[in-house]
Amino acid sequence: TMGKTITCKAAVAYEAGKPLQVIDVQVAPPQAGEVRIKITHTALCHTDKFTLSGEDPEGLFPCILGHEAAGIVESVGEGVTIVQPGDHVIPCYQAECRECKMCKSGKTNLCAKVRPATGNGVMLHDMKSRFSVDGKPIYHFMGTSTFSQYTVVHDVSCAKIDKDAPLDKVCLLGCGIPTGLGAVWNTAKVEKGATVAVFGLGTVGLACCEGAKKAGASRVIGIDIDINKFKRATEFGCTEFINPKDFDKPIQEVIAEKTDGGVDYSFECIGKTDTMRAALECCHKGWGTSVIIGVAGSGQEIRTRPFQLVTGRVWKGTAFGGFKSRTSVPDLVKLYMNKEIKVDEYVTHELPLSEINKAFDLLSSGNCLRCVIHM
Ligand code: NAD
Ligand code: AHE
Ligand code: ZN
Image (cartoon, rainbow, N blue to C red):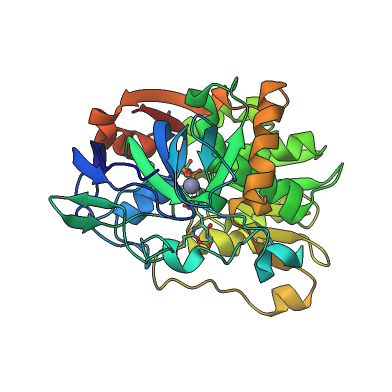
């Protein structure tokens, strides 16, 4: 049955660098292969702030940001079998179609099916947006656009989760926590006894610390320039801290001295190209592996001496921690329900949608990890 257009509140990013406007938007019914979700809770990730700043080359305006959320399926378009109305879901910016070359490769979690559409702020069916204000289209973002009371996503982007899971908490399993855990478990495959350095102790960095602790790492060195971040990091598995501001020499040298030549694994969870270099260069000669997680601004490039790689250091990167989304997110929800991974501990603030701009300010403050928006 053909659904109706819904009018609801959404936070619209009209222009880079400007506050969001919480206004009425029209959300068209889901077309073939699409799902309309009532978003109940969404958190903010640093990537939302980054895109709003105008630094993302794929950032389109006006758009509806947001990609770390949970909700309930309101209606589905033609041919959708993956979910049905009433299902509890986490929208996934990395889709998983299980049919494309990339999904079938077994080598990556990146899915190719809907990426051309999601990178252009539209839906694959007709390469158009389902959001509008007064008849003018508003772009989607990352195929999720969760800063809206209702959103439309591709069916292959919906992870169906346990109905008992608290949506105000598991929304965090839409991005930051899986990214950090997966970078350690899937991308680096940190083993028992390994030494680890984590650059940036926000949500993604702390999830790396937690993942490393669970993997049995012997040392987890946390690096941040905001000392407020050190206070809680021990609970997440961090065993020692370094504030680069306390040293005159490059931080990679400081770490190498403390670790008999360098760490086995490092993770960059900041998004700056100089810390990406430091993270590679603090790795041990012959085997040290560094994983880039942070997202760097448009036009920026990483650099190091090729000799760093010639002598056995490995530079890697990861999106959504290498987790195949539809398959893994429900499992991560189960791990949380069984108290095997933390989630509640990352929620430091909660606000209503009307105050979402305040959440953007909070995200860069020392005592904030995730601010959950109640829609
Ligand atoms: P966040 O803002 O909560 O945390 C970043 C931390 O880095 C903060 O604690 C900050 O104090 C610290 N920091 C900033 N500059 C620093 C410097 N020069 N040296 C040391 N520490 C510094 O961000 P987050 O939400 O945890 O995200 C972290 C990064 O990961 C962002 O770049 C985000 O865009 C990216 N990200 C990538 C993926 C992915 O799939 N690859 C997923 C989620 C987030
Ligand atoms: N659009 C940017 C890159 C942004 C980016 O790398 N996004 C990550 C997720 S960050 C989540 O907080 C990602 O999944 N990348 C892989 C993909 O397919 O987008 C740019 O530089 O163009
Ligand atoms: Zn994110």
